[in-house]
Image 1 (cartoon, rainbow, N blue to C red):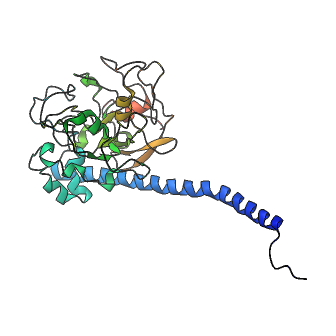
Image 2 (tube, helix red, strand yellow):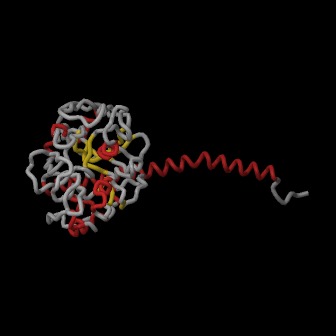
Image 3 (cartoon, rainbow, N blue to C red):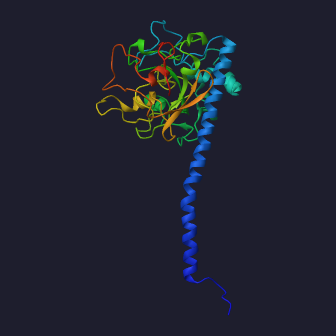
Length: 328
């Protein structure tokens, strides 16, 4: 006599086999998706570095980290909360070289306009500036840029996951300019010849994730400096450049650190990738740096005075320290 259907035991066995297969295959699928996102992120960094090189070929200099046209060039690092017109940053300067020429023209960047005159343009998301692994909104009112402005301005800015290398350690308010050892800072005019440590040993751009763990405040932007509704800057150096404060993907820093951890992570190298973050070197290569790279973070609050370039990570962020980097 033929059976016309499965028995209950057979059905349960089939379901169990399917469940086991799903449990085995799902992590592999997720890993494959993350690998694809990481590859896309790598391509973004390559495109950004290529754009920087094309900018250099055109202007014989790399774009400034951010622009402050109305003050004397007494230090490459500004004090916090200074009242000057908010200017554009490197991400805005290279728009024509990442296929965003119309946006560049519309925002009046080449004409010397300020950000306040183009609040609509700063809300335009640019896929090249976004890591696919980042789940934050492309245009968010929870970025650090928006949070620091507070209620002074209604517009949120388009976020970015890539910031320029400025310093081997955080200079802090009002100076410590000896820590500004990278290529991008206020009104910087870095040329290829200035990178004497070697283009393959110097980081140009690195990842910075939108850490939601700190009151949603650590997202960065591509446009430029933060500002108040009057058009003055709020925090002149935040949002577009970074330094080695905490280690890679470190959200908390040393137990003895008593400073603002949101600020520290906003400046530091971090990503949504497991185990490390990616960066673009000046030779055009993209490297994945382990979160276990040799690095000594600040022991406590924002330190003052000279800071030695005394770790592999800090040497990679410095373009003229003259020390061998070694393997990384």
